Image (cartoon, rainbow, N blue to C red; front, side, top):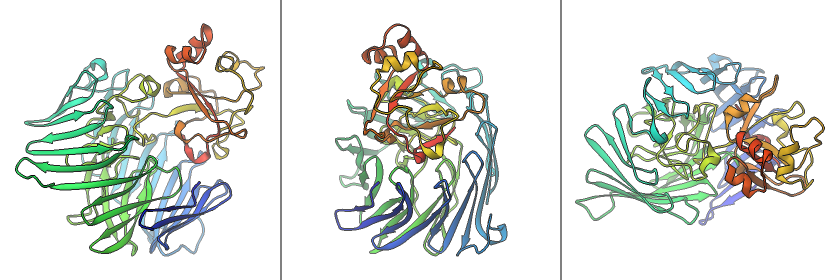
Length: 500
């Protein structure tokens, strides 16, 4: 884990850590951002945010149960009382671990799911209830509608046209249309809307570095923004003389805990308050004043910005997503996400069928799932001897067993283990094979680190072609592909694991 990050102009973010890399303090350019207190499982329970302090509590299964934000520090023990809270939120979950109720300053929100975990309805505290129907491939449909090729061509007032590569090239809304153009690598190059055209540029790693909007009547740029990255995380954005530097809580989190914004020659720190799905709910300044307050629809669309005109501009949406005001879309690193259609990307998954049979879907719901890279995670049912707090490791690191040998023998009672951890790209498969008392978890293979022997590898066996390439044939190939299996060699850190 990095202890500091220095920008080209000398500004520095520093993380104070203990043990195996658990952050307990964050500083930016010599200024305190947050002090963090953790429990015995290294979960954050207290975080300072300028004049405010955020307290968090968890359920027995490790999901966030409540959050209280008070001015100063709470002198007592347990949950700070409501009378002392500037902001309070509570969450309730079903027996399957799905979020079913959220209570906050704006009232209560209710969620309902089908047996496979797909979101069926969202009853917001403010606004109209949302209802969702899904076909067997996970496409949003009207109650009796079908979707060909997993390509949604109409949804409510929106209509879509695709090119031969399965990328949306026209997005219509009533009489208005937006035309989209893509390059050979699947990057969105420009969006044309009326007399305005927005152009996008990317670096060699596929990260967006620049966007500029021009009108037909003007040669000069109407709006221009530059982006700076730290790996796959947005580090800074610059527009004109203003800049916003994002500050993350640790090396893996896809959502920042704060930002430093420079405008008119002054730099101020702002703090983000998030919910269990890492959506930003409020933003406060160093004095504790709320500068941004948002209400969300179920699939990441901002239903209402309650901060008022001239307030803090907050463009972060679902984890890893950035809102483009010129198009209404969310940039999701490797793809673009459409918040107006439930859980949909505008182009197919760049990792192909390794991400699941539907190349356009986001996830069964956006409340217990995140996809910060625009890719899909893998799933696993924890054995009795496994615990999220310990992370995940194979039974026999360094054993050297072949992928075929692991697949053929992994389910036998006499199997002593190999260097691999078995996972699947399909949550449905994980649920199907989940035994009594087992817990299904998910993680991103990008977060796997070397195991005790220094080895790290990911072997995708989810399709016949990939299984054959890995040396599997006959029954072993059938076993692996039928369960969409991915073998992981390495260690999965606790903070990279999410309970489904």
